Amino acid sequence: MRIFVAKNYHDMSLEAAKVVADEIAQKPGIVLGLATGETPLAMYRELIRWHREEGLDFSQVITFNLDEYIGLPPENINSYRYYMQHNFFRHINIKLKNTHLPNAMAVDVDEECREYERQIAGVGGIDLQVLGLGQNGHIGFNEPGVDFALSTHLVHLAAATIASNARFFAAESEVPRLAISLGIKSIMQAKKILLLASGSSKARAVYELVHGAVSNNTPATILKLHQDVQLVLDEPAAMHISRA
Ligand code: F6R
Image (cartoon, rainbow, N blue to C red; front, side, top):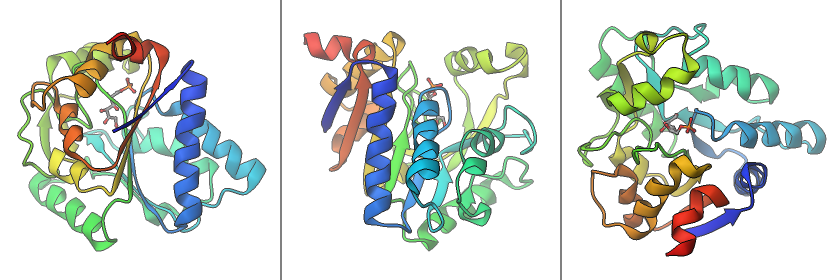
């Protein structure tokens, strides 16, 4: 696992954007796995800037997002489709048909999960998976206790995740309880993984990821078994590992 510790959130985002842009330069038709949440926002802004100012080309890029809340239609401002359109896709020259998120409105959720996996396999798998990190060590919506053998599946969100994500909603009661998420098995099949973590609230999970044993109590620890993982952290997120 390679670890890059940046001074602050801005520098962390710049480094992450560089990793993504370099991969696109090497493979213009790259398949990117993408995350939502607060952490990658400035990375997306940086990639948009490079698209505008330096011609970074997304015309052949294919994306698959990690997760989506069940029951939130694309036009709902808290849906991850809305987030991706608003914060990234509509500002770059990516083709809408090349952008994928689980269909939160699917009647048959299990079939939707299988279909999502088929679509990923159909384009040859994910080349670079971008991940954030939950305070409880989740990746995607793979919560503590998750079965590492699962591929894309229906998730009952952990109470801690609902409480944490309530900051984006008018009230905690409005946070959906269910989501579709890429499973650990699917994440581990990505050829490369880039995990971002910012802020002291992530420091404990980062410590477990770097120094702890592989355990589904902290799902991110599975990444220790992947052969090509890069962590891009800011100093507050790295504070326990740098002291260790
Ligand atoms: C988002 C996702 C989540 C977040 C994690 C961190 O698509 O899968 O695992 O990456 O909850 O969220 P932030 O970045 O908001 O702290």
